[in-house]
Image 1 (cartoon, one colour):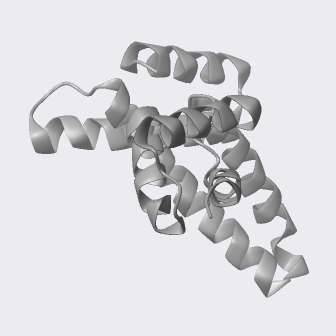
Image 2 (cartoon, rainbow, N blue to C red):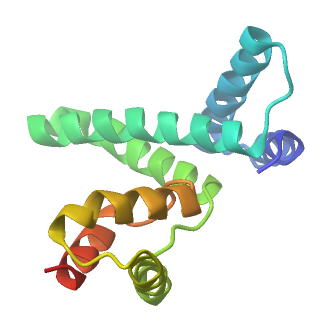
Length: 149
């Protein structure tokens, strides 16, 4: 996502009077502005993705904490956080999963002649480098583990 796209989405949310979407998009924009000010440079798509991932992590942690607390009084906040998490997920690029993930792991295993369990780190590292960490990690670890002896 480019910064111009983010600003356009903010405008659309304002026009639609979507307060929750507007709030989370403004938080992303603030994170991006902070990068621009602190590092005195224009933001890249990687910076945008990193900002969204950080906000999603914070949102998911708060949501998890409220769910564990089991407080019925926080039902509204839980619903709001769930919506924010969905919005943030929609801003991220699609994760590599399923058959595409298995094909990438198979290729990495065959190219590197990786057969031992101790090679798991090399597989995950190569997959992370190839996809910029944008893959289903538990599924990748399970599949890669089944390929190694």
